[in-house]
View 1: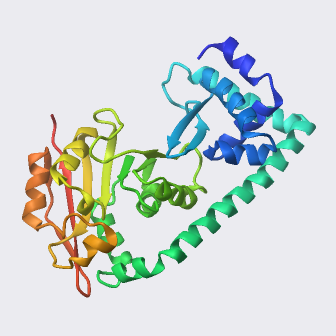
View 2: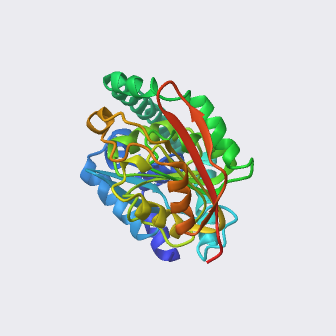
View 3: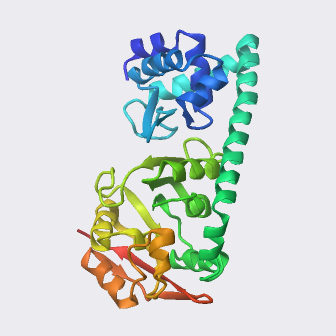
Length: 321
């Protein structure tokens, strides 16, 4: 991070407003344009300048591009932490002491509240449109609360550190474990699901979580990046579950934890057609052996029976490599 490029990037009222907005939450370029009352191409130019100064970063999800605060958090050992802290203090002070800027920021936050509401309404419409499918699947297995309690037990009541939720879907598991994690990353290959997850998690601090568009067979993360990895009702979509767990093992730190929640074997063939399930459940020993083969020491399997389908929870600890 170069101080001259940072100063030039901040020398514009619109870019100052963008920095205050993305400090609160990750926003699509179109959402920023809506809040700022400017054209999308003009906002994109401002974002490019901020990005060149390493003040913001961009993430593509399908046809959407999301913008988020790229400043290192307080207390990090990043080489840019000093400048980043100074920028954060400067922006906060400017809003506190510059009445005109403060008024503009307050108006931006009111429009930001409308963005939050629009996301929630879109999520509600999605669930309404798919309610029959969701209800049909839920009626077959155990209560979600019982499963979530068992998942928490599988983690042993310990902090989750840096958590990766693979196939995060609506973000429910990321939300459930967010209080126990220092940072939450949710990954999904569906932009629609990532938008639902963003709505669910949007009240968390902006630097507490991130959402990543990607595939579980080729995780876009460095080796040993996470302390805890979860796959909740995800593995049955995999053509080669072994490859998915190999990737999960690769990004899990030595001594880290994995928790896999999925169905035990069943014969509900309609789930392939209605919900795109590739695998109709996993045997307890089968998945435990797969975890072992990929460098985990598995715990005893937990079972949560439902009306027709049983959910199992496989947990394990990453062995030293």
